[in-house]
Length: 126
Image: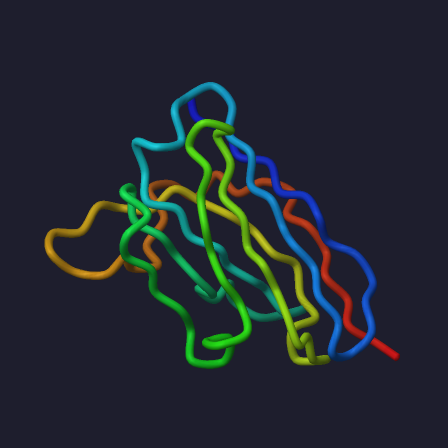
């Protein structure tokens, strides 16, 4: 069964940058569209960015558009989230997940399962 492990979080100052990684094992990552989600304390997970299997099509939440970039390197079985111009509103636990397929549409933030991993904490503070 496909397992995804997030890493790369940490403490950064406002305006700083981080790159998160989502590494797959037990399966081939290129078979799946992948999404990044984040969760504030006491809130539901929210979709942040997603990328289709081909990597040609991406989708972003309005709150991160222009600041975050999702990409994938199928040879390394890894999806990345480059985060720039970070703000305190970006403080959250970030998760990645394989997504349901879509037909001739951008990727959508619907996980294939609810088997969430540990996530990685991003804290933006001065």
